[in-house]
Length: 131
Image (spheres, rainbow, N blue to C red):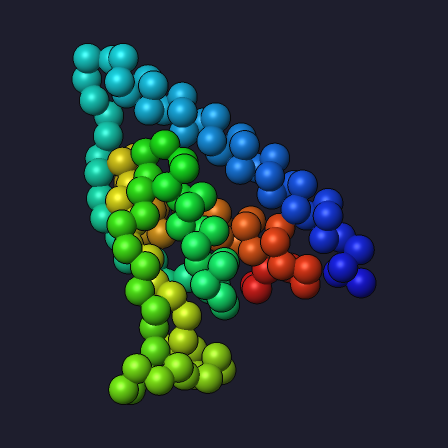
């Protein structure tokens, strides 16, 4: 049944991302044209819920396209000896390192990344995002 909602969820994600892109552009533009800079840069490691390289790359690209953020690195999590671990063990997947210009600390930056990831996964996965 979730297949029937896939296209509306994808369109909803694209509209949400377009709005976030506009808000980010406004924040960066305001910061550039005011004498006092309001940025508070931070680098965080974010543990994604992405299951594939495609999802991880898409999330990384969306982060980098958003003004004020940049994906610095992506690291695959794996088990001992580099072997992939069963998903139920909770250790496989990907971590990304993100530089954010406008956040109120690591928790705020991770919350923003999680919100973006949830919207993205809900839009691109036919079955929806993990809860």
